[in-house]
Amino acid sequence: MKRLLTLAALSICTASLISTSGCARKDEHPISLIAAVDVSCPSQTLTNRYGTMLYRVQRNIEPGDGLAVSAFASTVRPIYQGQSLGSRGAFNERVGTALLSVASSREKPGTRTDQLLAELARAAEKESRPAVIVIFTDGGMEDTAPAVMASIRSSIQRMSKRRSLKYLILAGVLPQHRSRWSRLLEPLGPRGLVRGMNDCEDALDVHISLAKTGAESEG
Image (cartoon, rainbow, N blue to C red; front, side, top):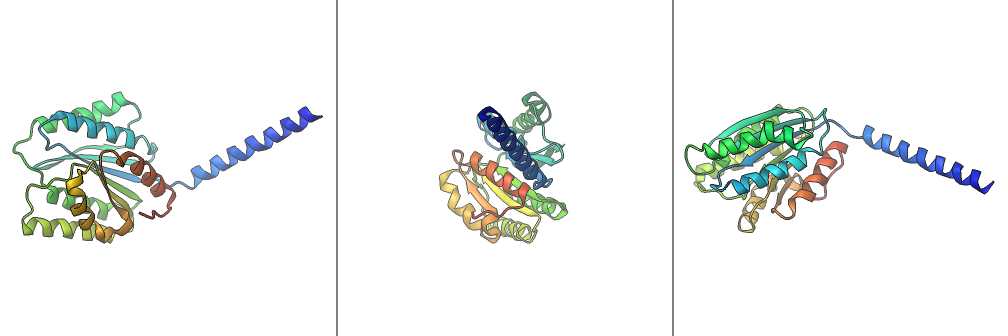
């Protein structure tokens, strides 16, 4: 009798877990992950690290979600648009190799973050489903002329008006650049996050999950 009761209890518990899992999946919505990778550093070590971080992050999205990847330095170059890439081999073939190619063929030094943010603002305005934008960068800006900074602020203001943009996350930012970017992202409120190399991956996982379920972040 005790064995029958135990089996019955296990069956109820298993059914409950399956039901709960099913409900969680139904609560998720298709999203778009829009990623930009800074390839301005002369060392390919940093580009490889950003690529590894991007690979891990994009594995959080489902086949029905969208993935767009650009590389940026003195120019912005789209390198991939499609679905998530499950295996490391597929990712390296479609994204990793292209990142290294763009990094090694830079025409001139420097990082045009203003151009990148203008492109991302246009992408956010075209996006109808929930979107998460992730910029992998150390946060440095060679050109801080008034016109450049005004362009950056304008692009961030445009993105702040898009409710479909759930998060704009700068990942890998060096300590000396974090306060400046935190101030620049203030129009986004809790949707704008600045993270360093050591604290970005958990934040990315959490906020992509929040975007998929429609939950709100507390910052």
